[in-house]
Image 1 (spheres, rainbow, N blue to C red):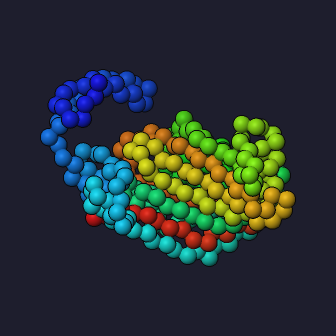
Image 2: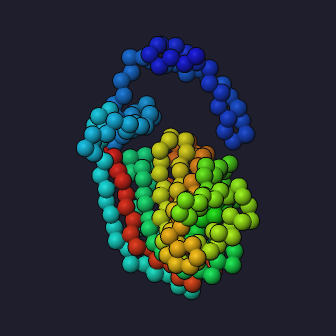
Length: 249
């Protein structure tokens, strides 16, 4: 069994690109993490589990927030042709969390008549617990999973495992709704995307939808991700602001 406090060598099996190999990994118990912007030279990402007044007691990094107001309003949108870009905004290990907020108006004939999000490095995501990696090559998202998808309306909670009845509620909720999409690089090997919607009107006014995706990173050499938004069959959508949460020394 792995013991982080003991020197030892372990056989590790790696699979990538359809090929499998086994390598020996030697653990040096004398190694002390030297974090720069929350990442050690050995590749370990600080978990920031002990944060006091915005500073991590383990690595010394400071948690800073940069918020940018947006004035984008999209109408007559052509899906996958009309994009809202976030110029210069990148998700990295240090810049590990980005939150985007906005609104949407849609007739919601189908579940996917909403805002859509996309990592330019290889994955298109919808708001309804669905998405797909790019054909012909992707650095993220192949084999993705949905960790949670639910609607809460007062004391009532509905799960997407309920099928058609759940998606009926979903289509009612999204017609006039605020959205928040959070992109977070919490683990070395995966990115989490959390979609939150709140209905502003209609029979489900005030109800909230939450969906959490886990996207495996399939290109171990990649160091940053960029994204943009489009929409399909919506009347209009806005992006009101985005915030970047960054660990810096």
